[in-house]
Amino acid sequence: MLNRNEKSEKMRRIYMDYAATTPVDSRAFEAMKPYFMTNFGNTMSLYSIGREAKRALEESREKVASLIRAKKNDIIFTGSATESNNLALKGFAFANKKKGKHIIISSIEHHCVLDSAHWLEKQGFEVTFLPVDKYGLIDPKQLEDHIRKDTILVSIMHANNEIGTIEPIKEIGKVCHDYDVCFHTDAAQSFGKIPIDVNKMNIDMLTANAHKMYGPKGVGTLFVRQGIKLDPLLHGGGHEFGLRSSTVNVAGIVGFGAVVDIAKKEMDSEAKRLSKLRDKLIEGILKIDNSYLNGHPTLRLPNNTNFWFAFIEGESLVLHLDMKGVAASTGSACSSESLEPSHVLMVIGLKPEQAHGSLRLTLGKQNKNADIDYVLEVLPRIVENLRKISPFKK
Amino acid sequence: MVLFCIPCLVLISYFAILSIFFPKYRGYIKEGWRCFLDKIRRRKCVASFDSRMRHAVSMWFSEKGMPSIGKFLYDERKFNITLIVVGIVFTTLSIFLFILLINFLTSPSCPGPVCTVE
Ligand SMILES: Cc1ncc(COP(=O)(O)O)c(C=O)c1O
Image (cartoon, rainbow over all chains, first blue to last red; front, side, top):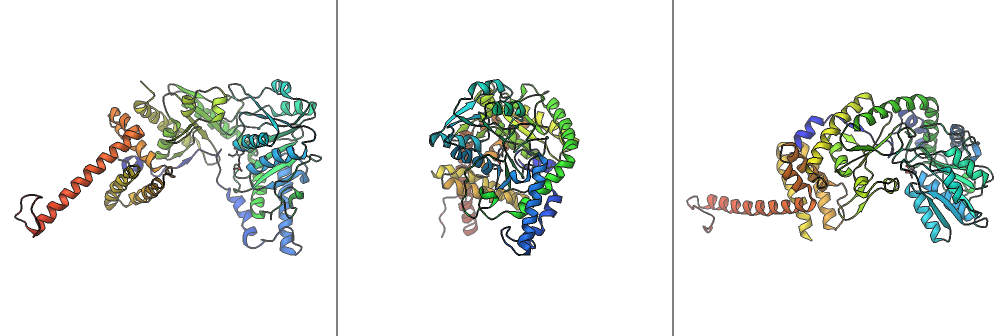
């Protein structure tokens, strides 16, 4: 039963889930190699291999800082974007609780921000979850209306991981600065894909990671503008300016530095190339009956597409695309016991059954025009066949 | 509780037979076995083996112009019940055939399964 399908598509493997993670760039991999077995020293050690590790760490710090036009010593390396977001929210909240206990975040943040905020609520902080419009956009005016005297922190993501909508960060940052409120942004999805200037965009803290931009997993960063006080989450040896104790993952950080260097050179051309592929994919997929685009038509990441298809479960789409060799993802985490539609899709106004019919295809370096053609060839057939057996369709 | 595991066992048997002729199906046996172990511990099948199979089977019927069968099997409960029924029928048939074979080998003159082995 499965063999014929699989036989014909056996050779074809197309990865279209670059928002989930990316393969490591071979150049970054080469740069990392010496730091596993030769220059494996501890950055805190005084002897030569320790000094070499420290030099590599500082070089990467400089590279990461320069991508966002930050100062070198404002960059802290962490273990992931999740950790950076936790440090930004919890660390800032506890270090500044005397100033106030009110925090504002958007309602479409990644779970690591949402859950940190919920945890802070349990610790006595008050959190406002800002609504978004049907495209997932925050209105800076509405933010202004929610800022209070005791507001200490605003955290709004730069680009959404599901629908790719790019928020008006500069304007949001300006509102925060007008009211003397610290502004943090989670840029895990936009870092290295679109330009970021922390000064021009009024950003006080910024989260990013390496594995979304062809670097290794297990490396993240938090930009913390000089003068901003944070309580560390990890106490110990005092690494990373006392904000993140733990022996530094030098190889991973060198890989991060290498991909940042590559992004500096290739970001613009890659963004243009991916935008073209994205637009072609969107145009093609919207030709399918009862298919709709989620997120903003233009203010979106160059590599992000997200749709919902009426009368279909996203999980089925993903499984059938996988059988045809295409790796994609859905906004619905659907298990036999629980139905949990994506909070992002719900907040932008989709009904649960619509959110369950969502499909995210995110593009990257390995995707070519032929891959888009292939997806546009197989997807309509899958949708058509799934609709025939759909329990939702009368 | 054992009922939950039967669909996995049926799928494993199906792939075990297929893999005699096509070695590439051996991977599915391993996956099916892991799914079986997950189910026996009352966990969700980690590699979604069961739902991938359900989707593959229902889509196959849909593509072959039998969407109503596809629609029926697309329903998780109905798919599992179908596999359980198939499992019971095949097990009964196999036992019956096995007895027939034993009887034939031990007393070739015996016409049916009720002959006793001497
Ligand atoms: C916007 C956003 N923030 C944070 C994270 C968490 O990243 P990490 O895997 O590095 O913890 C992700 C990853 O999916 C993300 O998309």
